[in-house]
Image 1 (cartoon, rainbow, N blue to C red):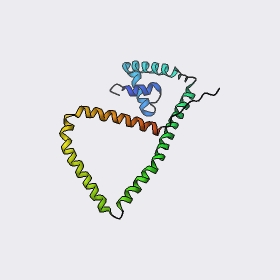
Image 2: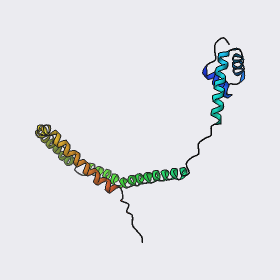
Image 3: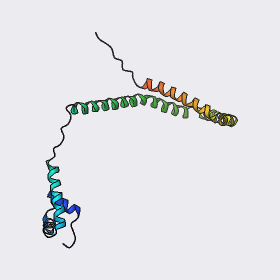
Image 4: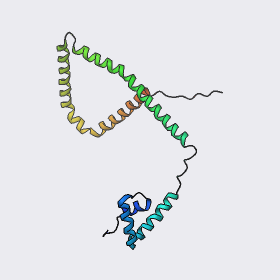
Length: 168
């Protein structure tokens, strides 16, 4: 070899993973090149020290902590599944109502009332638009507070409250 060995080759030679003709060529090069021989000896010493290290012992409560975390995850997934299952009848009823409304005897009357409602809303927004622009900050804060109250109420209804009872 005319060039020095790379760090990868030296490390492979030191830990024994560089084998075959490449390993033989690298070993011959190290015997002839003092720089690479010095590097190889430092990598060999490092590899020896690293292989003497022992794996740390897991804490005594490791298994219990992992099993507790798995149990918490399972409870969370079970609650999500129950929430989804509880929402399915409501979704089915909504679809049934929409389809019933669509295919009712007088769908044109429903559509006319819907268009009339949208038109009224559009006119109302045209009139109230400047008012909303002038009161943007108070309106935004009020909407935020209202949303927080609604979300809190929904979270209490969707999640059962667990109560601890004292037996004694």
